[in-house]
Image (cartoon, rainbow, N blue to C red; front, side, top):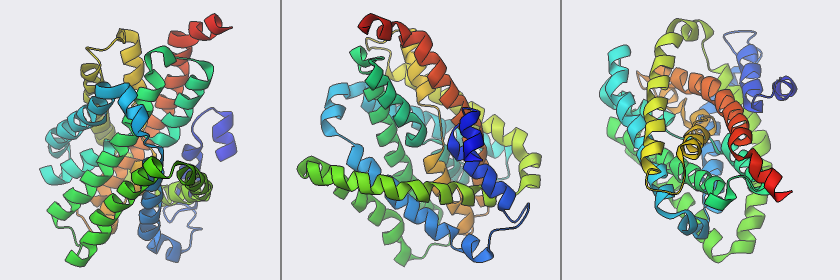
Length: 327
């Protein structure tokens, strides 16, 4: 499936999820129930790797270079997306505003797995580097993911979802401590941080496969077909407000309208964080857990391929001449 996804020029993770759907309990039922039972623990493990990798790539020097726009993009667009989902979701779904806020937080994280490789390729080709566009998007993506994960753990505690007081340390303090430790390691032990980042990258390869397969396996196809129109509507509303937020953050910069539109599009794909935390609410027994998982999966299926295609297409249209000028 991953091979087919690559041939179709869509993200490999879509192929991984397709494998999970086919092998899952709602289709061929080829995955052992024991594996499904520990999927929540595995997602937590994947989350730790995501946070550690985010901390080890969050270069403070780059953050200073791109400055205020990167900070604004890290927080304003996701907050706008969270706000609009919190407001509208209870109108479409039988959930509370707090449940909707948790849903909005899950949706608000951009996907490093899709965005970062494309921004690095732009930098290698000299596309958009004069105005630091790839650096801006990469830094904002890293901070955005961290913000979403930390806020998600906080809202779970506020919600009081079947998490005992003894689990607060594991669900909130430990991830934040790991993130801070990773940033400090990058700041003061640069060579060691690079080696550790390479090790985590290798660990992430099989982790990513299992993570997205398990996400696909947890999806009830009949339920998805029944609720897809409503949930996609919520996703689209959130994305529109998110894109408006990006434009607001970049108004007083040297970027023109096309470049700001590219940044909004590049900040669109959702995948990694949604896969890691999207099923957590269901695993811990939240009544809205099935809705949150469904929205997470559909967000991946809709925004990951559209974002990947859009970034590749728009960067050729907007920045293609920069390559010709260099040659």
